[in-house]
Image 1 (cartoon, rainbow, N blue to C red):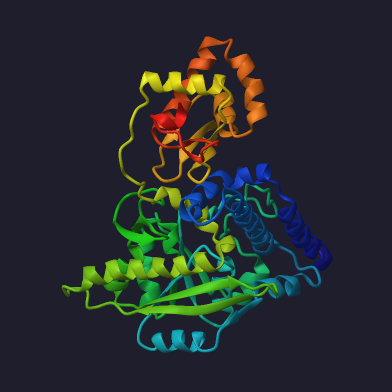
Image 2: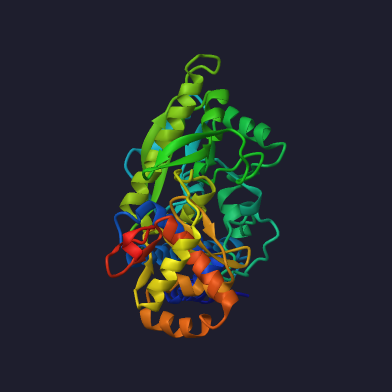
Length: 434
């Protein structure tokens, strides 16, 4: 049997592995897209190096938190000390004064929708509420539900929240935490039943899921978030109106002492479902919910685990997307031959892997620039003058490779994404690249 020491050792090993995880390790769990989204959000105020450090911190937190949680909630053992270890971690959650009283007061007249985010210690929130004697129905999408995950296995690629709580935790909670899959046909009925008996229904609005899954386009509206426009699911707002239950927004911030602090940041009361104000409430509620997430992200961005999904909902910047004239390729060729030093605008461009292919992506417009992998890597590192010069000696002798490289550089230049290091200005057509 697995004893207390073994479980503690596993948790410590996960923490250590997360701290040592390299950028290449983290690419397996979404680093590229996390970096791309953080670049879009913070590229104007932080250097690319700072954004990279932030993306690494986000993904290390994601791995540690998800893997430790999976280990805790799937451990099936009655060995001495294991229950105490599990509880010491799962219940390392403090509620700010008044939070629980406010929720219980609302429950005197109806069920309550709990809105929270994939930020901080969110995985522990439903369990912490149950530990306070509150019944929680947790809504999640089918992928996160992940009923096929093997107990005890937490490779770096894994870590989705499991619905298989260990017997120790399940006994302690007396079945207080229940799970509903958003895509299931019975989801709406089960949510209604929970609200009808004045329970809590917890939803992560930033998961942007529903009956059509997290990538579906049904029932979305545009809200402002981190200076951008994102299209978000309105499910929690519509459910609140339909079932006449308030929305309470909670945050679960990871503290530097290793504990989690839960705060109540907003309470939204829906108007009558048939009133003219219903749609206005839904729109306003979604904006307020995402404004709350924005405050969390600005304050502690390294705790923002859903950062790797923002590109799915973000509305790309619009504007002209000029093609590259043939003469621009010739200007860039002349510039390379004469020793001019180029660089990508790293405040906007990231190299990411999409469906197994390396591409360059403009974080503002979400335009992808494709070529063979070697060319993409070379262009992404074009600022390394000596390395590029050595590569050019071979490329210039290969007409096909040279044409591919110049075509990509010219297109990037035409769209203001290629810069002359000498002048620190975009190499748009004209005097700046001649």
